Amino acid sequence: MMSSYNMVKQEFIKKWITTLHILDCSVEHPLNVTERKNAIKLSSDIAMAAARSSSTVWSRALISRSGNKTANKPMARRVLKKARNRMKNRCLTLRRNGNFTAKSGVRRRTELLKRLVPGGELIENKDYLIRETLDYIVYLRAQVDVMRTVAAVDSVTGNLTNDNN
Image 1 (cartoon, rainbow, N blue to C red):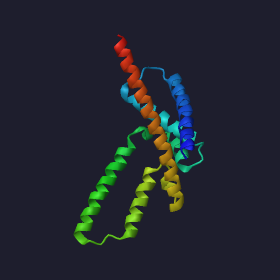
Image 2: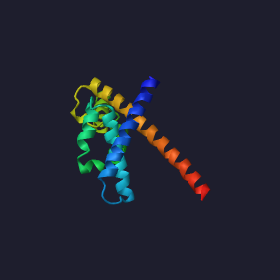
Image 3: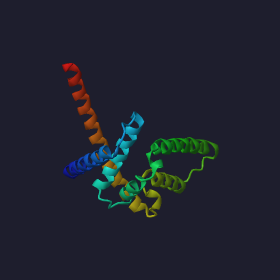
Image 4: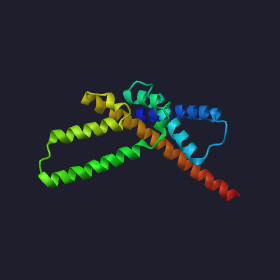
């Protein structure tokens, strides 16, 4: 399992470097901090999907969203905020009438999962949704690990540069 995870990270790194080079060549003017952050996130998402070779619903959804400018907005914040609000409402409902059924809980969590996984809203089969989610998590984890490594290396090299001045 760990060797395949390392292969995922290596493939992601290759694709990410390629997408960053493409991005760098296509930019005609210097980017401000927000534009740079959005460009890095977009190139990272495209690289993650490309590393998966578009063989999953989530990878195809990420690639199709890459051309959509609204995809650059921080969707995760909105989704997490909605999830927090749902949890508050669920707790209030439980306190009021005390009849929370397992089926409605599973249904709500399934709908939330469909919104969190790119392309998840297209998946009806719960088993397939879970497989797609697990696959997506592996690639997200690889993306985060690589980005943390890059940030750590940048931090160390930045400190070395500052010490030499």
